[in-house]
Image 1 (cartoon, helix red, strand yellow):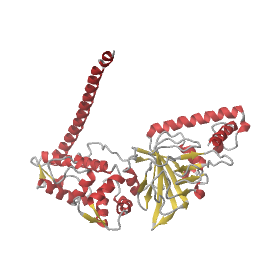
Image 2 (image 1 turned 180 degrees about the horizontal axis):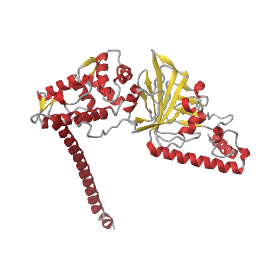
Image 3 (image 1 turned 90 degrees about the horizontal axis):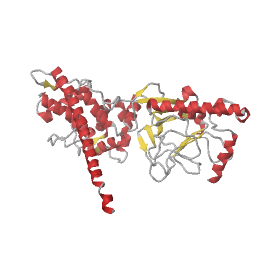
Image 4 (image 1 turned 90 degrees about the vertical axis):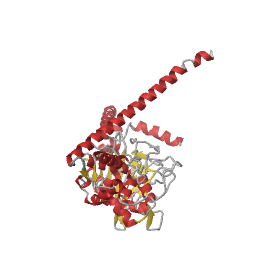
Length: 448
């Protein structure tokens, strides 16, 4: 009996091995197709600018004047000439877009950020002053949109030491950890140049269709390098056009089927810099009395400096959203991140009275410690608050469906007993059931 059961496992294992080999072959084929596409595009660019089967690096169309001299020096250091053959040109393209090992000890399989510092003439063990680091980062972030974004990084890069000099390797690790997508943008920048815009970037910049009181070029550049970003940002709420009403804020984000980014601009400054911070929730919001979300949530500060505060694993009070006003209950009306399970404090709290009673704290069990709003502890004065959806068109379709269902439910309830509803559209839209539901909610409270 035992032998009879074991026999079928051999063909199954063989089949799994064959499937794995096919997957590997398909991936390899796809990789080769991409490589061929790149080489064809690079060759076309070479042919456009070549003279006698050679191309002078000065003909390569780099618009950023700051990069031109460094580019020429970089090419000279590798090829010992500024006039390249087609093969040398293709090698240069591959070096700057993928940074593989071309038996050039000078490069040593560097990632894009390290490669850019080498490109600018600095080795991993070199010590550089903060003003030099800032100038390099300015050039690096110009590849995305705005070099001025580098100023938000400087405090973060140098915050672990009083020394005004840091090792290049340390700076590179900091940049890679703080802004995970920055390497992809560097690669995309060079692909664009070497292919003369023939190849679509694998890392497209997000598109913002609505205007923002908070997001400028510098903040956009910083936000674009985070792992959660998509191809399109949709503004779900802003207090300037939608009104500073928590009910409207909640209505505008409930049902949205994707990640959301909350940005807050305060009425105070720190060292003459505006205080801008926010939170990210990768999950759709739900209206309830319990904490929601997961370890993918995090808090962040943008200005005066950029910092992220990820989850610690010690607490699970990731996010909270409640629109139900229940008398003598610990469950507050508002939106929060972190804090304690008694709901008496939150790391970030957006109150029912948004502008006047919202608060921040510098530590809790769920998120890493640190000031998220300048050096403020306690009450905050909100000037602008915006919520951006990062889930694309499908998330908006889900929200439309959710709203339609809620409105149909409300209409059915009105027909049953209109007297059981409060007056006012804003209040009615958040009651999922009639007052009978209140008794059910109270039962939940008593169980805690």
